Length: 487
Image (cartoon, rainbow, N blue to C red):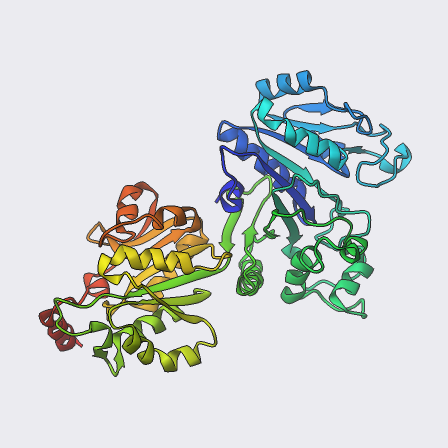
C-alpha cells in the first residue's frame, strides 16, 4: 500500500505532511515525494530543523535558500526545478547560517554535514502559493532523532508549520525491548518522564511505544503547558496518523498489530510500515476505528413472519448476526431496526449487555423505502472517527465470523472495497466500504443498498470466493426449512 493511499492524501488537493519522531522519517519523506511524482504530481520536500547532506542527495533536485530572509525562496528557480524533475528539496547547505530554522544552533561547526531547512512561516508561505506551481504535496521533516529508533519531543521541537494537514509521528519497531536509555533512545530522560518511568533499565514495551506516538500530540493540545512540554502543537484540523515503521519481520509485525489495535480502540488510526530504500511496500497495514452493520429493518413479507426473530441453533437470527459481527474484529457493531424494532431490540438485550458498549441499535423510521434507507441511517450514525464500514444482512444463518475477519484484513491491507463472490459473481452482502465511499453510501436508493457501488467499482473490489451456503439468504418459508434441514 502506498503512503499516499494510507494517509488519504487527495490527488487534487494540497497535502502538507509533517513527519516527526524517529525510526524512518527521512525514508518516509522521500517515499511520499516519489509516490507523488510517480502519479504525475509535483512535490516539495524540506525540513524545519536539519537534514544530513547525504540524505539531501536523495532528492533529484535541490533548491538552496537563505532561510532567515522573508524572500527565502526563488520562485522562478523552484518552478524550473519542478518542471524538470517533479520533486525539489528546499534547504540551505551545511554551514549556511540561519536565524530560526527549528530553533537549533546556527554555528556551522555544530551543524557539521547537516543542512538547514525552512522556518515554519516560510513553509506556510510556500503552501499559500502551492497552487501557482501545481504542487500537490509538501512533505516536511519536523525534528531530528540522531538516527535512533525512539525519541520524545523537546521544548524547541518538533517544529510543525500551521499549514500542516497531516501530522505523522514515526517510531522504529526495532526499539522495542531495548532499555530506555542511551544509546538506544534519543532524549531518554524525556521519554522516561513522558512514560512516568524512573528506571533507565526499563525496556520499551508495545504499550509504551503507542503512548510515545500519540500522547505528546493530544494531551493539552494547543495549550501553553503542552507547548512547554513538547515544543509546538498539532495545528487545528491536522490529521494525526502514527507510523509504526520497520515491520520487516513477523515478531515486529505482531507487536505493531498489538499497538495499532489498542490505538484503534481509542479511535486513533495508525499505519504499520516498512518504509525503506529496499522496501517495495511502504505500508503493510492500516488500522483505525471500524463499524460492522447488521441490516435488520425489513418486514419479511415473503417469509410471512419476522425472520429477524426466527431461532437458529437456539438464538434469534438477529442475535446471531450481531454476535458474528461483534466477533469479526470491528470496533463496534450497529444493528439497524425497522418493521419490528421493539421486538428486535428486546431480542438483542442480553447481547448488548455482554457487548460492553460495542453494540448499538439504530432505528430506521423509513424502513418501508427499502434497504438503502437502512444503509443511509447506518452511515449517518457512524462515529466521526470511523475509517470503514462493513454491511451484513440479518438472514444469512451460516455466515462465519472468519469470513468477515478476512474482509477486514483486506481493508487493512489497502482495499477500499471488499466483498464476497460465488462462482465469480460479486454478492452485495456482506460488503465493506472505506470511508472515502461514505458520501456515496449516503445517496443510495431502493433495495440495492451498497451492492450497486460494488458493481460500479468492480475493478477496485477485493473479492473473496466462498461457497454459496455461507452467504445464502433465507427469504421464504421454503428457504428456511431447507436451511434447517441442512443444519
